[in-house]
Length: 611
Ligand code: G6P
Image 1 (cartoon, protein in one colour):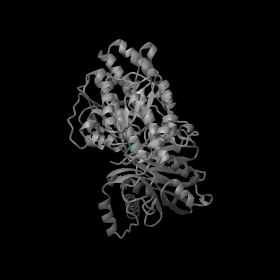
Image 2: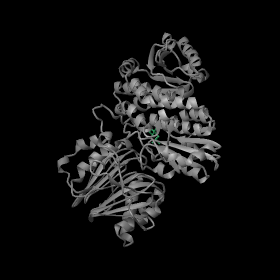
Image 3: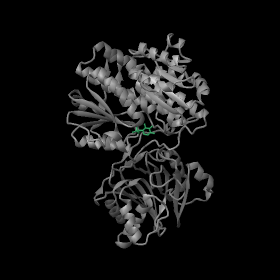
Image 4: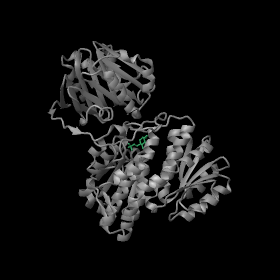
């Protein structure tokens, strides 16, 4: 993970870099650092968030038209001032920021130690920059060539940016496995892990590909491969508005993103779904429909919340398409020699499009001949480029570390995909297909109604904020929602929570239930409703405190539950899009009431580009 930003041009670099780092903090916030060139090469770095570094600096005095900045999620070496980036080479002439992991750092370090190099930090990145300096010094090659030679020797992942005291108009960057975008201004250049630090200044960008080097010298950009072949930059226009990456009056990004769901689901459906005409088009996978229709099996891979969206899809695809589905954690799949064949279709789900385990699982499945489709939110990220085809979720930038609107957008795409296939296959009746399209089209309005529950949920949060544990129980389509509700609470409020299929409760978790255990049931009206009502009774009998998400107008559960939260009714297959909303709000309010940092929970990062 880690976020990187760099600037070279005529403006002051520091304000651009520090603002960019604030936008990239979702990628890590263990430490922050900036290096500026202004005759001297000065490095300012500190353990902690961007604001903590800023508080120690006299910002007006930081001048220089070229600089690099980094916000870190620690891998090698604990988060402290020394391990913070940028790292300087031994001579003090070169400074580097690095996002990724160098796997063969130990052997490089051994060689450098023999040559008399000393290291102050515990990071692989400090070894990396000294390795470059050593090649530069001893091989009589210029810095760009030294970087290229070094990149040919390192094993691992990197997005790097390097500046040199000797060449104040030179900025070198490269990527492999970690994202990097070059922004093209008028006589100025920006570099960042994603486009958010750049769009304020320019919407013209070049997404670097793996094993490419960007050399910015003065006002000229050259892109070459690490094999030394010069490449023509592919300039793209980023379609992202500044408002999309600002809080817009909300206290936290997470709350803004929860409240954006009527719009983000609507954006996801727009242009694809026309219920009136019975029309459903997912252009991105159009050419692969036959592959899916003839698939032996659909394998869904993802991590975290994306994996939960995959679980919802398993129920939907099997119900309507009658194609066997397996849902796998990408991190397990990639290392267990799975049986995958040419008639398998793999759907990889990822908000960021950069998750290292998901990317590796894609490579593995591809090498075994499977067809790979991606469902991603970040346009131009690595997963859409690694897959054969796919559909974007169009949820807009998600900045809060806990995923919310990305989840509902992923499910929206998966439902459209499943209905499109089911209709083509004839495994769904025309009337049900038509009805589901109408129901899907009404989801944004129903999501808006679910958000009206916010004051009630805030009230309930106040009563339960000091609980030490929570159980979340659901059945059928609402079982993955229970998992997602528990994950949200764990992530941001640090309360232990478990999601379980409600009927499995009696095989273990029931032992935990007493008068202090809040149990959140997702008990909307569906085919397992009567069964879950019995499960609620079992919890009540053991004095558990029941909070139930129910369908509007429900009278049965309200007799048993301490609190009922009534959400608008919809077809059970679409219910996760609605029933998850109160759970997102519950975790949000509990975390705020406990004084937790909602948008930047401890130890987590939004984009996990290391395994
Ligand atoms: C991290 C994030 C989660 C996310 C997971 C998968 O753990 O904190 O919110 O669900 O990664 O990320 P992806 O970008 O692949 O969906």
